Amino acid sequence: MKKIIFTLTLIIAVKANAQDLKISTEIKEAMNLIDTNTFRSHVAFLADDKLKGRLPGTEGYQTAVDYVVDQYKRIGLQPGGDNNEFTQKLFIRKSLVNNSSSFAVLKDKNNNIDSLSFARDFMPVPHPLIENVSAEGQLVFAGYGVEIPGVYSDYDGIDVKGKFVVVVNGAPPGLISTLTAHFSNPGNKMNTAFTKGAIGIVIVNATARPGANLNPTIQSNTTINPGKTAAYGMGFTGNLQAVVNGSSYLFKKIFLNSGKNAEQVLADLKNGKPSSFNLPYSISVAYKTTYTDFESYNVVAVIPGSDKVLKNEYVVHSAHLDHVGIGKAVNGDSIYNGAHDNASGVASLLEIAKLYKSSGAKPKRSVLIVMVTGEEMGLIGSSYFAANPTVPKTSIVANVNTDMPTVIAPLLSIVPLGAEHSSIMDHVKFAAGYLSLEIEKDPEPEQNRFVRSDQYSFVKNGIPALHIKYGTKSNIPGFDLTGFVKQWRAKYYHQAADGIDGIFNYAAAKTYIQLNFLISFSIAQNKQRPEWNAGDQFGTKQ
Figure 1 (cartoon, rainbow, N blue to C red):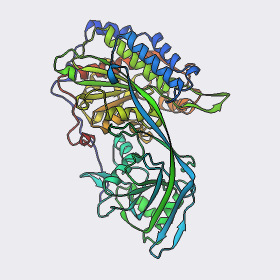
Figure 2: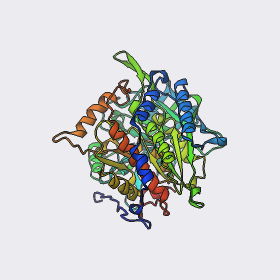
Figure 3: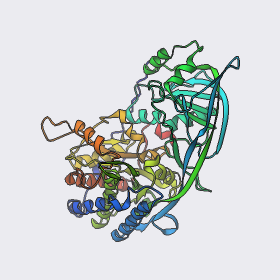
Figure 4: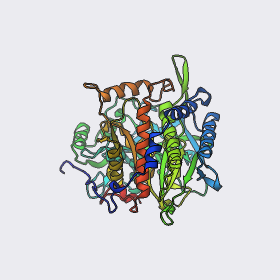
């Protein structure tokens, strides 16, 4: 099979062109009057040590919820949550594997048994629905575990019904960064295996040293609300009987007596050639999962639309309110405040909401301002909201997500992750052009950023979405902004150093707020709702 080259044809024009939108004098003035001191005060409050890192299920997170509700009221927003309130309640289940209970063996065709070593060879993933897992099945190798209809399949020519699928990390070559991230996502591999009839999956990092990628304390999180559509984050949805992470040592072991060369198989996959076949072993897996359930909240407000028809449709602004809580002490500081991640995103949305109200902007469509919980736990809150929104699901036309804007240098160019899949790109072009910002492709596709933030939850539910990230353009000759951001990220990302006293460029924050406002306002004013590009992979999720 030839190496796949998969690209997307961007829709350059929509029926009602976003570039035709006129921005009133009142809106221009309000945009210019965005107060960066207020932005800073929001960040300072949410990143204060008193909130102890805003971990869901803690008093600190509840303080953040109360703060956002109070700000919604001050701005003059209407409740958009459950029962005419500002909150949407959900229950988060933290699942933890009981290490001592974990058991796995390989069995060959002659019934010879090879016991596998916990943490060196394998690591089971907590099952969110079954406390005592016990599963057995024939092993089948299915490459990356990817199926792209009409383009690529690791499942052609194999039958995995009732079996365990073995897949490797990553995705086929030739994909754009958003699709690489999507098809590399373990949750996507699990769901594909399930739809093919597999009962279990072994996901292998085939190049890491034995045990290097296996954490002996594995936990997962999901929502368990009774009577609601099941909604999960990026991981195990509970549909398979068992999920196991495997080491490179296990990978080599299961290739013994297979008649296949493991190194050649990996080389073929990297060149876009699927390689799938039966393996000469079955696997038996058993382990126990313990659960802890707790309440958490999304915080939802609505700005009603002005058009008698379009007001029944919604543009969703989202940002995650949570962070990671208290962690390992660094220089005596163990509170991971999350000033950039994502107090700055929450502050941006509060200022966008205020901009809608202060400017007199009357969007034709309604606008939802949604602060979600559990992003750091695997996109839990956004997954729940996207599957169980507080408005009719079919009425949501787009999601504009804000996560760690990284406003640490002048904002001169942007990367609209996800916009290339739909006509949302036209609205980005309008907003970026208005602010004289350049649009770039993803400069770090290896980061898989598209599936690591809340817009992915909306995309998985068939809703066009995007996430604006910083670009690479600098106004300082010879300055390597990409290298600077990498150094900054190493020091601040998910670290105790991410506090209000870190690096902030407040002029960039103002531009970022203006940009995201203009994108949502453009979508809200356009009679044509955003559409997926013809033949787009995500367009089939509806």
